[in-house]
Length: 112
Image 1 (cartoon, rainbow, N blue to C red):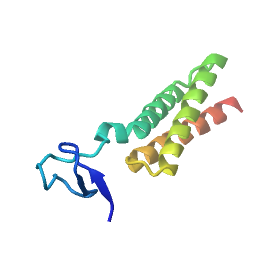
Image 2 (cartoon, rainbow, N blue to C red):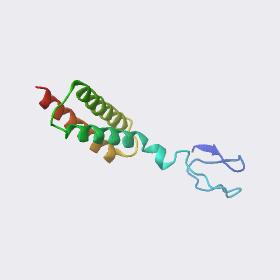
Image 3 (cartoon, rainbow, N blue to C red):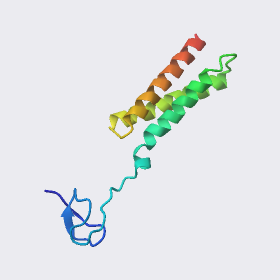
């Protein structure tokens, strides 16, 4: 049985208590939903930007290739870290990893 301190009165309560049995203060988790998904959201944004940059297939210059590759690699790293750490937002991380890999494959196809 694990005990924690109440956020309202400071008395010992069970760690799964939603409210304190002594004072009635709500015991919310310290992580807000937006903080829990940040890594997956960042990965998805970077991956989508990399994928959209790959759609411009007219003429690639070196700077555009390097920038798109950096976005794709960064998106893949954030998505991989989110999946490895078992953070919430697994679906977002999988989509981000897919877009990152697709953008990197398109870049490899244009370079060769």
